[in-house]
Length: 424
Image (tube, rainbow, N blue to C red; front, side, top):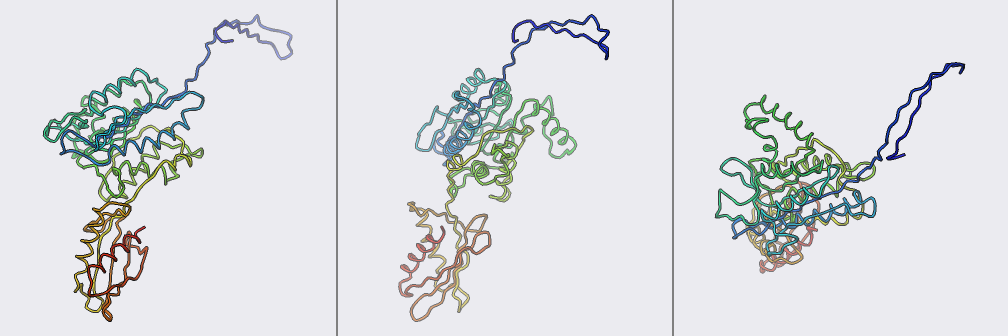
Protein backbone atom coordinates (compact mmCIF):
# COMPACT_ATOMS: atom_id res chain seq x y z
CA UNK A 1 0.00 0.00 0.00
CA UNK A 2 1.52 3.28 -1.09
CA UNK A 3 2.89 5.53 1.66
CA UNK A 4 2.19 2.95 4.43
CA UNK A 5 4.64 0.60 6.10
CA UNK A 6 4.45 -2.95 4.81
CA UNK A 7 5.85 -5.96 6.70
CA UNK A 8 7.37 -8.77 4.69
CA UNK A 9 8.07 -12.06 6.53
CA UNK A 10 9.95 -14.92 4.87
CA UNK A 11 9.91 -18.43 6.37
CA UNK A 12 11.93 -21.35 5.00
CA UNK A 13 10.52 -24.87 5.30
CA UNK A 14 11.79 -28.33 4.45
CA UNK A 15 10.20 -30.20 1.57
CA UNK A 16 8.13 -32.38 3.94
CA UNK A 17 7.09 -29.26 5.88
CA UNK A 18 8.26 -30.76 9.18
CA UNK A 19 10.91 -28.15 9.96
CA UNK A 20 10.65 -24.38 9.47
CA UNK A 21 12.87 -21.41 10.22
CA UNK A 22 12.00 -18.70 12.65
CA UNK A 23 11.58 -16.38 9.69
CA UNK A 24 13.07 -13.08 8.68
CA UNK A 25 11.13 -9.82 8.71
CA UNK A 26 11.63 -6.77 6.51
CA UNK A 27 9.66 -3.58 6.77
CA UNK A 28 9.43 -1.02 3.95
CA UNK A 29 7.34 1.93 2.94
CA UNK A 30 6.43 1.92 -0.76
CA UNK A 31 6.30 5.20 -2.59
CA UNK A 32 3.77 5.58 -5.34
CA UNK A 33 5.47 5.70 -8.73
CA UNK A 34 4.28 8.60 -10.85
CA UNK A 35 4.87 8.28 -14.58
CA UNK A 36 4.98 11.77 -15.99
CA UNK A 37 3.68 12.26 -19.47
CA UNK A 38 6.04 14.29 -21.69
CA UNK A 39 5.21 17.66 -23.24
CA UNK A 40 6.59 19.38 -26.33
CA UNK A 41 7.93 22.94 -26.20
CA UNK A 42 8.66 24.31 -29.69
CA UNK A 43 10.01 27.71 -30.74
CA UNK A 44 9.39 28.62 -34.39
CA UNK A 45 11.52 31.51 -35.69
CA UNK A 46 11.24 32.83 -39.26
CA UNK A 47 12.69 36.20 -40.31
CA UNK A 48 12.12 37.76 -43.74
CA UNK A 49 12.11 41.45 -42.84
CA UNK A 50 15.51 42.47 -41.47
CA UNK A 51 16.42 46.05 -40.65
CA UNK A 52 16.91 47.91 -43.94
CA UNK A 53 16.59 46.08 -47.23
CA UNK A 54 19.96 44.39 -47.75
CA UNK A 55 19.21 41.16 -45.86
CA UNK A 56 15.52 40.57 -46.60
CA UNK A 57 14.35 37.04 -47.44
CA UNK A 58 11.17 35.74 -49.04
CA UNK A 59 10.08 32.50 -47.40
CA UNK A 60 11.60 32.21 -43.91
CA UNK A 61 8.40 33.24 -42.11
CA UNK A 62 6.36 30.93 -44.33
CA UNK A 63 8.80 28.11 -43.55
CA UNK A 64 8.22 28.50 -39.82
CA UNK A 65 4.44 28.80 -40.14
CA UNK A 66 3.96 25.91 -42.57
CA UNK A 67 6.21 23.54 -40.64
CA UNK A 68 4.42 24.45 -37.42
CA UNK A 69 1.04 23.69 -39.01
CA UNK A 70 2.08 20.14 -39.83
CA UNK A 71 4.04 19.55 -36.63
CA UNK A 72 1.30 20.87 -34.37
CA UNK A 73 -1.30 18.44 -35.72
CA UNK A 74 1.21 15.59 -35.70
CA UNK A 75 2.56 16.19 -32.18
CA UNK A 76 -0.88 16.74 -30.63
CA UNK A 77 -1.85 13.26 -31.79
CA UNK A 78 1.18 11.82 -29.98
CA UNK A 79 1.59 13.99 -26.87
CA UNK A 80 -2.04 14.80 -25.97
CA UNK A 81 -2.95 11.37 -24.62
CA UNK A 82 -5.51 12.76 -22.17
CA UNK A 83 -7.52 15.96 -21.83
CA UNK A 84 -4.39 17.99 -21.08
CA UNK A 85 -2.70 20.00 -23.83
CA UNK A 86 0.95 19.00 -23.77
CA UNK A 87 1.98 20.73 -27.03
CA UNK A 88 3.22 24.31 -26.72
CA UNK A 89 4.34 26.37 -29.73
CA UNK A 90 5.95 29.80 -29.44
CA UNK A 91 5.86 31.92 -32.60
CA UNK A 92 8.45 34.52 -33.56
CA UNK A 93 7.94 35.22 -37.26
CA UNK A 94 8.22 38.39 -39.32
CA UNK A 95 7.38 38.40 -43.03
CA UNK A 96 8.39 40.91 -45.71
CA UNK A 97 5.17 42.83 -45.25
CA UNK A 98 6.08 43.51 -41.61
CA UNK A 99 3.45 41.07 -40.33
CA UNK A 100 4.35 39.51 -36.99
CA UNK A 101 3.04 36.20 -35.66
CA UNK A 102 3.59 35.93 -31.94
CA UNK A 103 6.58 38.03 -30.91
CA UNK A 104 9.04 40.03 -32.99
CA UNK A 105 11.97 37.66 -33.67
CA UNK A 106 14.62 39.89 -32.16
CA UNK A 107 17.44 38.74 -29.88
CA UNK A 108 15.72 39.77 -26.67
CA UNK A 109 12.43 37.98 -27.42
CA UNK A 110 14.11 34.77 -28.52
CA UNK A 111 16.25 34.64 -25.37
CA UNK A 112 13.22 35.44 -23.17
CA UNK A 113 11.28 32.58 -24.78
CA UNK A 114 14.16 30.20 -24.11
CA UNK A 115 14.18 31.34 -20.47
CA UNK A 116 10.43 30.75 -20.22
CA UNK A 117 10.85 27.16 -21.45
CA UNK A 118 13.76 26.71 -19.05
CA UNK A 119 11.35 27.43 -16.18
CA UNK A 120 8.42 25.41 -17.51
CA UNK A 121 9.90 22.27 -19.07
CA UNK A 122 10.61 19.01 -17.25
CA UNK A 123 13.24 16.28 -17.83
CA UNK A 124 10.73 14.04 -19.59
CA UNK A 125 9.85 16.78 -22.13
CA UNK A 126 10.95 17.43 -25.70
CA UNK A 127 12.27 20.81 -26.83
CA UNK A 128 12.39 21.89 -30.49
CA UNK A 129 13.85 25.06 -32.00
CA UNK A 130 13.32 25.89 -35.68
CA UNK A 131 15.19 28.86 -37.11
CA UNK A 132 14.80 30.15 -40.67
CA UNK A 133 16.80 33.25 -41.48
CA UNK A 134 20.34 34.41 -42.06
CA UNK A 135 23.39 32.79 -40.53
CA UNK A 136 26.87 34.30 -40.79
CA UNK A 137 30.39 33.44 -39.67
CA UNK A 138 31.72 36.35 -37.60
CA UNK A 139 35.37 37.57 -37.50
CA UNK A 140 36.04 35.13 -34.62
CA UNK A 141 34.98 32.23 -36.92
CA UNK A 142 31.81 31.62 -34.91
CA UNK A 143 28.33 31.02 -36.30
CA UNK A 144 25.82 33.76 -35.45
CA UNK A 145 22.10 33.50 -36.19
CA UNK A 146 20.97 36.96 -37.30
CA UNK A 147 17.91 38.30 -35.49
CA UNK A 148 15.41 40.87 -36.76
CA UNK A 149 17.43 43.94 -35.73
CA UNK A 150 20.39 42.91 -37.92
CA UNK A 151 21.19 44.97 -41.01
CA UNK A 152 23.61 44.78 -43.93
CA UNK A 153 25.41 47.86 -42.64
CA UNK A 154 26.51 45.99 -39.49
CA UNK A 155 28.74 43.58 -41.44
CA UNK A 156 30.73 41.74 -40.28
CA UNK A 157 29.55 42.32 -36.69
CA UNK A 158 25.88 41.49 -37.04
CA UNK A 159 23.22 41.56 -34.31
CA UNK A 160 22.04 38.10 -33.37
CA UNK A 161 22.65 35.07 -31.18
CA UNK A 162 25.96 33.27 -31.25
CA UNK A 163 25.63 29.52 -31.71
CA UNK A 164 27.84 28.99 -28.67
CA UNK A 165 25.50 31.20 -26.64
CA UNK A 166 22.44 29.32 -27.90
CA UNK A 167 23.95 25.96 -26.98
CA UNK A 168 24.70 27.24 -23.49
CA UNK A 169 21.05 28.31 -23.16
CA UNK A 170 19.89 24.92 -24.39
CA UNK A 171 22.07 23.17 -21.80
CA UNK A 172 20.03 24.88 -19.07
CA UNK A 173 16.68 23.69 -20.41
CA UNK A 174 15.54 20.67 -18.36
CA UNK A 175 13.85 18.94 -21.34
CA UNK A 176 15.82 15.74 -21.85
CA UNK A 177 15.41 15.60 -25.63
CA UNK A 178 16.27 18.64 -27.73
CA UNK A 179 15.99 19.18 -31.49
CA UNK A 180 17.54 22.00 -33.54
CA UNK A 181 16.32 22.60 -37.10
CA UNK A 182 18.43 25.37 -38.66
CA UNK A 183 17.47 26.57 -42.14
CA UNK A 184 20.18 29.23 -42.39
CA UNK A 185 23.38 29.96 -44.28
CA UNK A 186 26.58 28.44 -42.84
CA UNK A 187 24.44 26.59 -40.28
CA UNK A 188 26.60 23.49 -40.54
CA UNK A 189 28.96 25.36 -38.23
CA UNK A 190 26.44 24.66 -35.46
CA UNK A 191 27.62 21.06 -35.40
CA UNK A 192 31.24 22.19 -35.20
CA UNK A 193 30.42 24.30 -32.16
CA UNK A 194 28.67 21.49 -30.29
CA UNK A 195 31.97 20.52 -28.77
CA UNK A 196 33.69 23.18 -26.72
CA UNK A 197 37.41 23.81 -27.22
CA UNK A 198 38.35 22.31 -23.89
CA UNK A 199 36.70 19.06 -24.94
CA UNK A 200 37.75 18.63 -28.54
CA UNK A 201 40.15 21.34 -29.66
CA UNK A 202 39.93 23.51 -32.75
CA UNK A 203 38.46 21.89 -35.86
CA UNK A 204 41.21 20.77 -38.23
CA UNK A 205 39.92 19.39 -41.51
CA UNK A 206 43.38 18.27 -42.62
CA UNK A 207 44.05 16.06 -39.61
CA UNK A 208 41.91 12.96 -40.17
CA UNK A 209 42.83 11.35 -36.86
CA UNK A 210 41.92 14.41 -34.82
CA UNK A 211 38.71 14.82 -36.81
CA UNK A 212 37.73 11.22 -36.16
CA UNK A 213 38.38 11.56 -32.44
CA UNK A 214 36.46 14.83 -32.35
CA UNK A 215 33.40 13.20 -33.88
CA UNK A 216 33.52 10.40 -31.33
CA UNK A 217 33.64 12.96 -28.54
CA UNK A 218 30.75 14.82 -30.12
CA UNK A 219 28.71 11.62 -30.20
CA UNK A 220 29.34 11.03 -26.50
CA UNK A 221 28.50 14.63 -25.66
CA UNK A 222 25.29 14.68 -27.68
CA UNK A 223 24.18 11.27 -26.41
CA UNK A 224 24.37 12.52 -22.84
CA UNK A 225 22.51 15.72 -23.65
CA UNK A 226 19.95 14.18 -26.00
CA UNK A 227 20.58 16.85 -28.64
CA UNK A 228 19.80 16.28 -32.34
CA UNK A 229 20.59 18.80 -35.11
CA UNK A 230 19.95 19.18 -38.82
CA UNK A 231 21.23 22.19 -40.76
CA UNK A 232 20.42 23.46 -44.23
CA UNK A 233 24.01 23.81 -45.36
CA UNK A 234 27.59 23.02 -44.56
CA UNK A 235 29.81 25.57 -42.81
CA UNK A 236 30.92 27.23 -46.06
CA UNK A 237 27.60 27.10 -47.94
CA UNK A 238 24.68 29.42 -48.35
CA UNK A 239 21.25 28.03 -47.50
CA UNK A 240 18.96 28.24 -50.50
CA UNK A 241 15.52 29.74 -50.97
CA UNK A 242 13.82 28.20 -53.98
CA UNK A 243 11.04 30.31 -55.50
CA UNK A 244 9.66 27.31 -57.39
CA UNK A 245 8.83 25.72 -54.02
CA UNK A 246 8.09 28.94 -52.10
CA UNK A 247 10.18 27.51 -49.26
CA UNK A 248 13.71 27.29 -48.05
CA UNK A 249 15.25 24.13 -49.46
CA UNK A 250 15.65 22.32 -46.13
CA UNK A 251 12.16 23.19 -44.91
CA UNK A 252 10.68 21.96 -48.17
CA UNK A 253 12.63 18.71 -47.72
CA UNK A 254 11.41 18.34 -44.11
CA UNK A 255 7.78 18.73 -45.20
CA UNK A 256 8.15 16.64 -48.35
CA UNK A 257 9.77 13.81 -46.38
CA UNK A 258 6.95 13.83 -43.84
CA UNK A 259 4.40 13.78 -46.66
CA UNK A 260 5.94 11.36 -49.16
CA UNK A 261 8.37 9.00 -47.38
CA UNK A 262 6.51 6.30 -45.41
CA UNK A 263 9.80 4.69 -44.33
CA UNK A 264 10.29 7.49 -41.76
CA UNK A 265 7.23 6.20 -39.86
CA UNK A 266 7.04 3.18 -37.57
CA UNK A 267 4.24 0.60 -37.67
CA UNK A 268 1.99 2.94 -35.66
CA UNK A 269 2.64 5.88 -38.06
CA UNK A 270 4.82 7.64 -35.49
CA UNK A 271 7.36 9.97 -37.06
CA UNK A 272 10.84 8.73 -36.09
CA UNK A 273 13.26 11.60 -35.57
CA UNK A 274 16.40 9.85 -36.80
CA UNK A 275 14.73 8.50 -39.95
CA UNK A 276 13.01 11.82 -40.67
CA UNK A 277 16.20 13.86 -40.49
CA UNK A 278 18.30 11.28 -42.34
CA UNK A 279 15.85 11.15 -45.25
CA UNK A 280 15.57 14.95 -45.25
CA UNK A 281 19.34 15.17 -45.63
CA UNK A 282 19.18 12.82 -48.63
CA UNK A 283 16.29 14.72 -50.20
CA UNK A 284 18.15 18.05 -49.97
CA UNK A 285 20.97 16.60 -52.09
CA UNK A 286 18.48 15.09 -54.54
CA UNK A 287 16.76 18.42 -55.05
CA UNK A 288 19.92 20.48 -55.52
CA UNK A 289 23.17 18.88 -56.58
CA UNK A 290 26.16 19.80 -54.37
CA UNK A 291 23.95 21.25 -51.62
CA UNK A 292 24.76 19.52 -48.33
CA UNK A 293 22.45 19.44 -45.36
CA UNK A 294 24.31 18.43 -42.21
CA UNK A 295 22.76 16.01 -39.72
CA UNK A 296 23.76 14.94 -36.22
CA UNK A 297 21.23 12.61 -34.59
CA UNK A 298 22.64 10.41 -31.83
CA UNK A 299 19.20 9.96 -30.26
CA UNK A 300 16.01 8.59 -31.77
CA UNK A 301 12.43 8.91 -30.58
CA UNK A 302 8.95 9.59 -31.93
CA UNK A 303 8.12 13.24 -32.47
CA UNK A 304 4.57 12.96 -33.79
CA UNK A 305 1.96 10.82 -35.50
CA UNK A 306 1.44 11.24 -39.25
CA UNK A 307 -2.02 10.43 -40.60
CA UNK A 308 -4.31 11.81 -43.31
CA UNK A 309 -5.08 14.94 -41.27
CA UNK A 310 -1.37 15.76 -41.08
CA UNK A 311 -0.85 15.05 -44.78
CA UNK A 312 -3.73 17.32 -45.74
CA UNK A 313 -2.15 20.13 -43.74
CA UNK A 314 1.03 19.98 -45.85
CA UNK A 315 0.47 21.92 -49.07
CA UNK A 316 3.63 21.92 -51.17
CA UNK A 317 3.74 24.13 -54.22
CA UNK A 318 6.09 23.56 -57.07
CA UNK A 319 6.18 26.45 -59.51
CA UNK A 320 7.57 25.01 -62.76
CA UNK A 321 11.11 26.01 -63.69
CA UNK A 322 11.30 26.28 -67.48
CA UNK A 323 14.36 26.15 -69.71
CA UNK A 324 13.99 26.84 -73.43
CA UNK A 325 16.51 24.32 -74.73
CA UNK A 326 16.45 23.48 -78.44
CA UNK A 327 14.56 25.49 -81.05
CA UNK A 328 15.24 24.88 -84.73
CA UNK A 329 13.77 24.77 -88.25
CA UNK A 330 13.77 21.11 -89.30
CA UNK A 331 14.64 21.92 -92.91
CA UNK A 332 17.58 24.18 -92.11
CA UNK A 333 18.65 22.69 -88.77
CA UNK A 334 18.82 26.28 -87.56
CA UNK A 335 16.51 28.76 -85.81
CA UNK A 336 16.24 31.13 -88.77
CA UNK A 337 13.17 32.87 -87.30
CA UNK A 338 14.93 33.47 -83.96
CA UNK A 339 11.96 31.94 -82.21
CA UNK A 340 14.01 30.94 -79.15
CA UNK A 341 14.87 34.54 -78.26
CA UNK A 342 11.27 35.65 -78.67
CA UNK A 343 9.91 32.65 -76.75
CA UNK A 344 12.25 33.23 -73.80
CA UNK A 345 11.23 36.90 -73.73
CA UNK A 346 7.53 36.07 -73.76
CA UNK A 347 7.83 33.38 -71.07
CA UNK A 348 9.78 35.84 -68.93
CA UNK A 349 6.88 38.27 -69.23
CA UNK A 350 4.53 35.54 -68.00
CA UNK A 351 6.84 34.70 -65.08
CA UNK A 352 6.92 38.32 -63.86
CA UNK A 353 3.24 38.93 -64.49
CA UNK A 354 2.09 36.73 -61.59
CA UNK A 355 -1.44 35.37 -61.51
CA UNK A 356 -2.32 31.68 -61.52
CA UNK A 357 0.17 30.63 -64.21
CA UNK A 358 3.37 31.03 -62.21
CA UNK A 359 6.57 29.91 -63.88
CA UNK A 360 10.29 30.53 -63.39
CA UNK A 361 12.64 30.91 -66.36
CA UNK A 362 16.12 29.47 -66.02
CA UNK A 363 19.08 29.69 -68.37
CA UNK A 364 20.21 26.07 -68.04
CA UNK A 365 18.72 22.72 -67.20
CA UNK A 366 18.81 21.42 -63.64
CA UNK A 367 17.00 19.02 -61.26
CA UNK A 368 13.20 19.21 -61.67
CA UNK A 369 13.47 21.81 -64.45
CA UNK A 370 11.26 21.38 -67.50
CA UNK A 371 13.09 21.78 -70.79
CA UNK A 372 11.20 23.02 -73.85
CA UNK A 373 12.35 21.52 -77.15
CA UNK A 374 10.74 22.87 -80.31
CA UNK A 375 11.12 21.92 -83.95
CA UNK A 376 9.25 23.77 -86.66
CA UNK A 377 8.79 24.06 -90.40
CA UNK A 378 7.21 26.61 -92.74
CA UNK A 379 4.43 25.18 -94.90
CA UNK A 380 2.14 27.33 -97.05
CA UNK A 381 2.51 30.45 -94.93
CA UNK A 382 2.10 28.63 -91.64
CA UNK A 383 4.51 27.73 -88.87
CA UNK A 384 3.89 24.11 -87.90
CA UNK A 385 5.73 23.13 -84.75
CA UNK A 386 6.19 20.14 -82.49
CA UNK A 387 6.88 20.82 -78.82
CA UNK A 388 8.49 18.24 -76.52
CA UNK A 389 8.59 18.87 -72.77
CA UNK A 390 11.17 16.96 -70.75
CA UNK A 391 11.80 16.66 -67.03
CA UNK A 392 14.92 14.93 -65.70
CA UNK A 393 15.72 14.14 -69.35
CA UNK A 394 12.48 12.15 -69.74
CA UNK A 395 9.66 13.18 -72.07
CA UNK A 396 6.47 13.83 -70.14
CA UNK A 397 4.40 15.67 -72.77
CA UNK A 398 4.34 16.33 -76.52
CA UNK A 399 1.96 18.42 -78.61
CA UNK A 400 1.72 20.19 -81.96
CA UNK A 401 1.05 23.88 -82.48
CA UNK A 402 0.71 26.05 -85.54
CA UNK A 403 0.23 29.70 -86.42
CA UNK A 404 0.53 32.26 -89.22
CA UNK A 405 4.12 32.94 -90.28
CA UNK A 406 3.48 36.60 -91.04
CA UNK A 407 2.42 37.32 -87.46
CA UNK A 408 5.29 36.01 -85.36
CA UNK A 409 4.32 38.01 -82.28
CA UNK A 410 0.89 36.38 -82.08
CA UNK A 411 2.36 32.95 -82.78
CA UNK A 412 4.90 33.31 -79.95
CA UNK A 413 2.34 34.72 -77.52
CA UNK A 414 -0.17 31.94 -78.20
CA UNK A 415 2.57 29.32 -78.10
CA UNK A 416 3.80 30.61 -74.72
CA UNK A 417 0.30 30.29 -73.29
CA UNK A 418 0.01 26.77 -74.68
CA UNK A 419 3.36 25.74 -73.20
CA UNK A 420 2.40 27.19 -69.80
CA UNK A 421 -0.91 25.30 -69.87
CA UNK A 422 0.88 22.02 -70.65
CA UNK A 423 3.37 22.36 -67.79
CA UNK A 424 0.74 21.17 -65.30
